[in-house]
Image 1 (tube, one colour):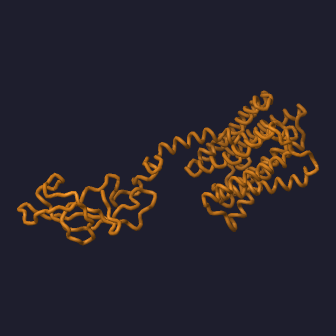
Image 2 (image 1 turned 30 degrees about the horizontal axis):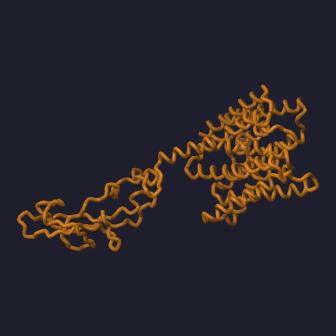
Length: 408
């Protein structure tokens, strides 16, 4: 159907209809104009408003009539050009369709690159499958990289490169950067999550605590967050949260006791892992307390940049007189993975899933990270899979699962 851009009205077929024909009649035809208050996310964003005009109706109102021609002329509102109004395109909806039943752009697969809802859901499922190994690889490949350099120096260089890559993407997309309070909240979350969390985890791994145990300890972040939400956010401390806290504490005691009895851990190393645990939980509580999400590329860039500053300060205070990074192939390939796949790829995938409305799915995926990390660390890092570790994985998984059910 042809639309006249000047009048926002449809063009009609012109023909030499004989007004003196004995069977001539008149009918009111509905022409339509753009509605100014239509939502841009629906197909009727340019759905017309009704205008009425009186036009003649011939005895044979079809394109096979010999008096019809293929010429089209625009019809302005209120004009009396003779002709018939062609049928509206089938996808254009009238103004009486309820808003809840209007088709949105996500329900269409078109030649202009718009994906339908099935394709988006398929990509979301594939992204969810890839998210767990990508996010877990931060500890696994980080442990390999830490064999060739001090933890704060390695992590600081990693965050600097990741900041440059994320900032370049944010500038390319011309996304608005946080300012004022939003910038302060992004810095605070970055200090807790990218700074304290990763500093504690990698320092514990560098001091000999197995990566699977570290992943299991920091996997209790949802449990600590649920317990801290009662005094900090004023949320009710339910029975389910107490049971989940008991299961999580039992899991932590199992792995901690096993490490202490085997002589592979010390109190200082466990404190480092706990700093990583409380750093991640503190970031989650900060986001809930002040209502900031950081689920956008510029805020994520600010958070990673803050982590780079924290790591640089820790290196200056603790490691500047220590051994440098050994830039060899054994270091470069796990280090490149932590930068590209974990810091950049996992972050972009997380933002993409949140942007597609998969926040509930992402929350459930985080519950799979600790057991996945502990199990993959066995063949990848050569760490033993003991009975205590298996029992701790089951208890920790039960704790976070209870929290997920309680949140529903």
